[in-house]
Image (cartoon, rainbow, N blue to C red):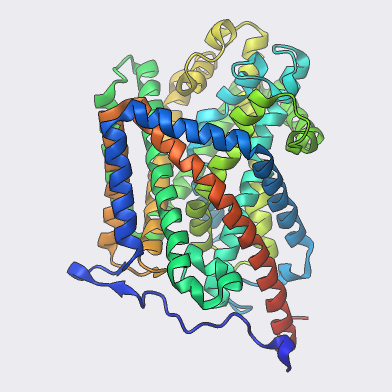
Length: 530
């Protein structure tokens, strides 16, 4: 066959070969203990000095965002271009797991899992608050347009979709596809370091790989813990708004305990009986809520808004993606760059989970499902929720019209208040928030466990139980010990991790394209592909 078809991505490394097995567990020797120590030190330091930690870490976050805003935007653009190209390239025919591989899950269950892990709670948290913020100038406006004008309204929806559409899903696609390809097609451990084999070769199983995996675990834990903490606050605010009950720390702690308990049960049921079932419930509830909003709200206005949002998104995606010569720095850095850093820091978790459930899909099918379909669904979702809120503002209805954004966690419920079936909508909304958190916690523990077990996917269940409990404990400790300051500090750490991860993702992109191109040559030479 010649050198052209020699497999360049073979390794003798076996998942778990560096593991230790204390107390019947199965742990990667350097990654697990170092990660545990780092997490404990960070959390203890934050709890002891919440205000100082927030000030210090917020300062670092803001410096990174201000200095590297251009780098985040250009990198995100590269990820989108590469993903769209992969849909049309000949390598799109390559199947994850080999050409004879079959999907483990039905298309609906597969999509439900990747969507729930990828966006989840954010769609509930920001679907109303973000368009209203851009329209009213709560924290700057895109391109510095005058707030509360027709131009601001159109741009509000387009800019919201810009943050929740192709770009974040492209980030997830790159990570997920890289991990799935090197794990399922080349037999490497399902862990972040495997994607760096084209660059580092067998050195990836040493300290360079350890550092990559440790960064991924720390970013994932902190991202999940802060999301769980902020989600508990939103759910508590919703319960307070709906039933007049307290939204204090005790209620938030009870929510975290409840979410963690259900996530624990899901873990014990396994991937098939846990995450898959919960993700399907997620999508069903989200569909019911969306149906209610469209038909209980200003139906014709929402349908028109879907089209207007799509046009605004397509029209403005290029100017919004431009990092140079922008005068709207407040909005650009406070929103776009913050989002890109957050999505990128979140990508090891989401990408690895999507990879875990995507065996048997072709590259073309994978990228289309992860990039295009969520963007279409999100357009309908944001147009319905955000459009209804903007309609209320234009007509002078409700708190959002009178005061704008008073508290982000309440914005969705304030919009619900002026729709028919308010109680039903709010209740479904709260349940959806909680179920989204449960699936995030469950899928997050699966990912963290896989990395800290050296890429093994069949590690003892007790390890996943440990990580589920740890995520809940960290969130509870942060809320109880430091409140919003502590959560903000840990969130700032997760976002700051977005900078080194952007570099990691760019290298990953290069390795993926190199690997897929080589794999196609191999398959053609073997007669498995034309």
